[in-house]
Amino acid sequence: MARSALLNVMVNAATKAGRGLARDFGEVENLQVSVKGPADFVSAADHRADEVLIAELEKARPGYDFLTEETGSKAGTDKSHRWIIDPLDGTTNFLHGIPIFAISIGLEREGQIVAAVVFNPVANELFVAERGAGAFLNDRRLRVAKRNELADAVIATGIPNRGRSGHAEFNRELPHIMQRTAGIRRCGAASIDLAWVAAGRFDGYWERGLKPWDMAGGLLLVEEAGGIVSDINGGKDMLGHGSCVVGNNTIQRHLLAELAAARGA
Ligand code: IPD
Ligand code: CA
Ligand code: CA
Image (tube, rainbow, N blue to C red; front, top):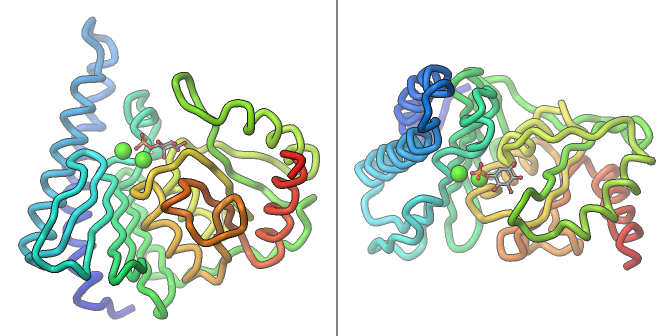
């Protein structure tokens, strides 16, 4: 697969930041035993990745705006482009030595995500997509899964933890969905949940309470792999509403309808 200049820029930045994260992840195990614990170390790793991504992307495309989890909004001179970045998605996994985490980069042009990279440096899985040009995992073209029955589907989700909102809704949705599907999975990294739907590993995924940087890259991967994406109300305001429901055409429609039924909507 011949990558565009734009994707090359994004992949180079993700690979460079990913090398640092992979190195730091190797250190986490040693720190688990220390009294202070690895939390400060992980937060420093997160910030380092953020800095590398901003520096690399700014060098290659000067003037673009940024929205990153660690830096927040950073205005550039080119108002038509914005990088939306999670330098470390799956922090809790990282902290616990679970090798499921990713760097997520989405490029927004005139309000629409047009390019995406989700990179898990320890699994060495690089997911990329450009609008209209397909989604790829390490150069292999991706298609969402073909299963059409919820009863056969493996569905991913995110479970709100202590201090997060959405517990009551989730407690209504989960029993309803688990009784109608082949299995539920919780990866702990929204960008990877989305990438794995694009790769056909999961048949669908829903979550609420997300931030734009959790989804900006992954949603385009799903769309470019032939999937359908919406917010939990069936609209298209995923980033604004902080929710998503994704899958192939049929699974997405069924999942959305069952989630609404679970809430009594
Ligand atoms: C989190 C992960 C997780 C999701 C949370 C996110 P973080 O991001 O994507 O899967 O359930 O809502 O906040 O904190 O690891 O970058
Ligand atoms: Ca995140
Ligand atoms: Ca993060």
